[in-house]
Length: 65
Figure 1 (cartoon, rainbow, N blue to C red):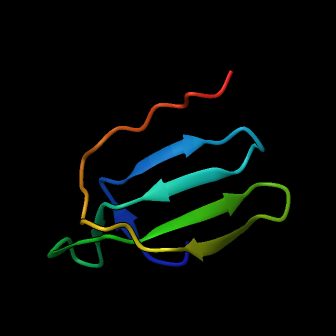
Figure 2 (cartoon, rainbow, N blue to C red):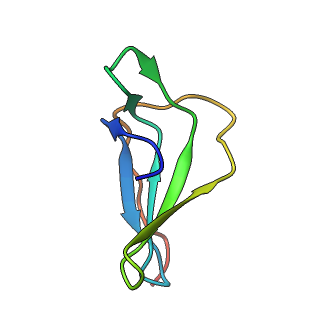
């Protein structure tokens, strides 16, 4: 992971990568507005643009068929 996190949202996208967003960072004292993509083919993470607000313990739903 680019940033250690817990309590984040994770969802598989249509291209089979995984979006991880928000959650607590480090020792749990900071709620994050960061997001990253995990690519299982390359087994790598990359940061994506920050969210406008911090988020923790939320759920994501895929709207792609």
